[in-house]
Length: 626
Image 1 (cartoon, rainbow, N blue to C red):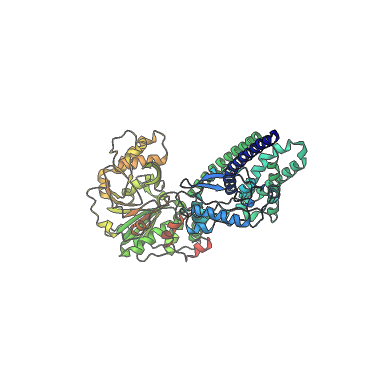
Image 2 (cartoon, rainbow, N blue to C red; image 1 turned 120 degrees about the vertical axis):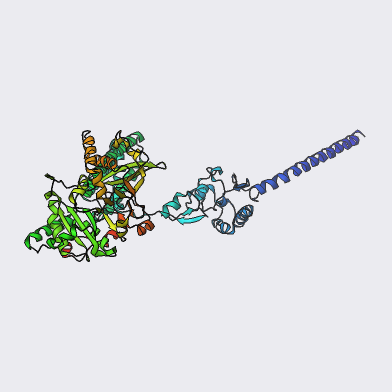
């Protein structure tokens, strides 16, 4: 009985234990199945036993959308396609069709182990859309995945030198560089200099490494070869044929030098030394260029000097009949229009006369008085004897041979005074042309004349000037174009403490109508000489003396001409508009860059060269470049 009862109790306990285990198993399975499902979705639907686990990288898209980027090489071909398609769908609302077409498809490689993936250098990935915040993508855990990311610029505003597209937006340097591209001249010479600087900077550090004697000798040899080449060549055309190989050897040596651990402080110090030497050299060349520029603008060009000398020699070699005796009456005829030109340049004075005559309605009424020095007198005489200008009359006067009131005259040209001032917070430089000392002897030189028009030899006439002779000057002495961008208040340091209207405008020579009768009444010559003596005691320069005395002598005696009569600035200003040039009666090349010089502004030279007699044999013999 006991045995049977005990067996029943044990059997009941066993059934109870089994029930408990079954319940616990169901609970465990109910918890495990969802967990496995979640793990399978997170790992790209891999099997639970798969050893390939990918670590996710999370970043934020343009509008805060969460982006999950995984290593695509861990996925099967079909799974990777689905994975990329899912990414495309995430970005579909914010990306255009053109952008979606550029998203690359997954690589064709099979799933690889981490070691195989590490060794394979040709692994590919998918392109990151341009709106993703690349800085927030922590892909440093997978170097190959980081190397496979490609950035595509979809705003194509141009293509730079490396073939990459330029971003089309305001302020893009790449786009600006493409729009303002200029062909670099002597690029090989510049590259050689750049590499030479770098080699010099690294050589001292490499020379201190005992194990790099060979590299040190190679760098020293490359430096010496390039220095010798640059000492003999300044342009690419002067370089030897094998210079490309020399440059490649230097590049290779520099690359090897950069691969070694060197003291950066030494390299920095050496580069700074080279920079200081280069800056000193640049300053030297700048000062030298300024000196050569001043020399070039103040020296007569070789061709024009040849022209003057050839004409002078020909004058004495082939005497000609002087016709001045028959023209003496015209020289003092008050009914004619008398023009006065101060010049030592044969060709320049010829252009002034030719342009004036070509636009005159009645050339027979024009009389030109060319005032020059003794050195160029005979060349002027022969030139204007050989060349005729319609019916105009031309007189050449040697000012150094004239004797006025028992005093000989010293020839001087109109004075140009450089003035720098600020307009709208920008610095500007102007050249004021004023009368020289000789201009104030005009009433004595032309005692029989009542009115003259004074022209500088750096002007070109484009219209008929006969209207100037009917001008009512309202009691003024000098009719000139005023230069109101320069007030007399800006020149008070040159004008001294004299009483003058500081708001008055400066006036320009170049085109001036002079009333000689009124001049004699006011005795302006004496007034001018008084101001000259006053300034000369202060040891001022000749230009400052002339400017000071001229402005004060003609104070309140200037009749302002309309600005369309004369346009100035063509000898120093590159930004003169074409419309004012075409409508101006007279073009004035005031400044250092005269049209007959190589330094002249090219786009203005044509207006001057149109009136040069290019068929003259003397110009051909002297190789004048027209």
